[in-house]
Image (cartoon, rainbow, N blue to C red; front, side):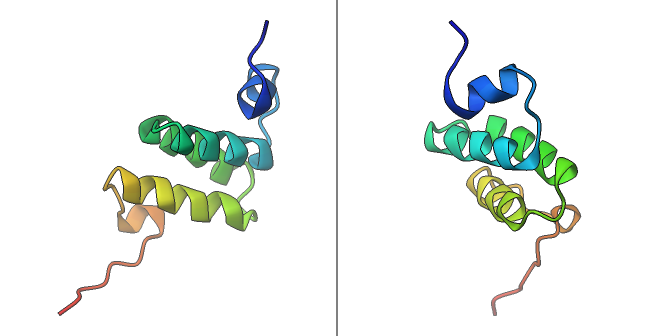
Amino acid sequence: PPPRGPEGAVARGAADGFTLTNLGMAQLGQGRADDAVATLRRAVASSPELPQAHYTLGMALERVKRLSPQDGAVMIDAE
């Protein structure tokens, strides 16, 4: 049987930002941060107006230590 939840929805062709964000959150919860980053980049590209996609992408990038200005991250020098 096909996977259930957001992974199943994406496998069946749902690629809207909300579904991709949910999948990225699930991947983060499973410890699959690299997969989550890729999924959440798709979510942001699909629905740039969706704040949850941006926020969750930031969490995933922090987890893999890849925050950069290209991802919209604000770099602060804490002195």
